[in-house]
Image (tube, rainbow, N blue to C red):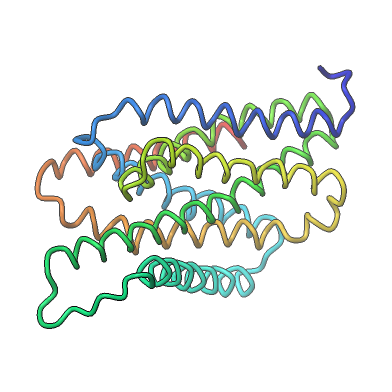
Length: 263
């Protein structure tokens, strides 16, 4: 395999990294019953916050972005993802031309809940796309340095992405998507790594300058979805509080262990 052209190895590694992590996460998440989905969402909160605050933002700063550049980018990203979610909710609801008079019915609340969850799913798919794109750039950089290092980096990306993809599946399923649709949307997000690998190979010097900003935007999406959408849902849970807390902590510890191994 090391005898193949370098561009082919990069493309293969990006695809393999996305596919392997996607299928590994699907095997874990699709075996869960709906009863355990809320606990999986708690794990997702820990993964998202730890990935954003303990991995992505430090990585952006270590890549040369100053705090005065990183935190305005983070702020713009959070506001941008809020606007994206609001637009998605408005677009889903725009087709409903019925006029309701008086107090909202239970059906109205159901429609609003469905639209809000659709916006939540869009934010996590777009944000994870940024993350996967950056992973593709990193894989390309490793291959350009040494093909052996490139395959090691690919293995590290797979290990790093499995809990992330599992968390994404939990969020998409909780947002009401079927397993098939959750798999398709997560798969499309994973393909962004191939785009990152191609651009990294063709124009890495130019792409490298954008990496800290892309990393910060990915962090913004994870912080936004965790704090704006998932933690309010967790606050409404009345049962199994200790279990939710334990799984949230497990998500944080998982990211810490995998990122330590990756570095």
